[in-house]
Length: 118
Image (cartoon, rainbow, N blue to C red; front, side, top):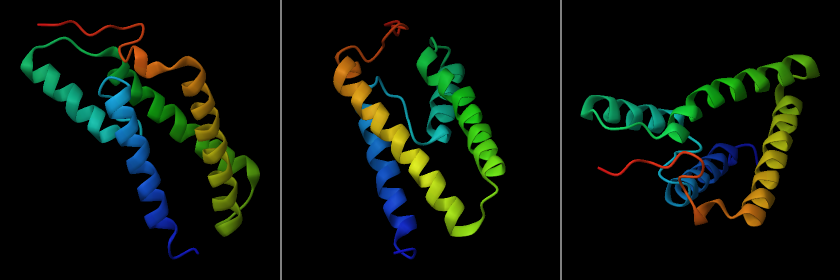
């Protein structure tokens, strides 16, 4: 099972990314580099920023710090730490699924920050 874990996590990240990109107004939810590229493209082009895309960058840093704190506080190492972090990831994804079903964010991908049309 451990040999297949990287491939499984890659598929999950890809599915989350595709779903987020197409239903949440072109936001890469699993890969912060995609959002950096889009933000840089808008900056070079001189267009208006999509605030949700820009917010993903500090949220990514906050998530990274949170994972580090969980790992540090748990005192676990190796496979036990991986299982704990995968459980946390599963719970977050399950909560996001419930939230998405209830609030239907894809009905208004721009949300509170509508993108300006040129």
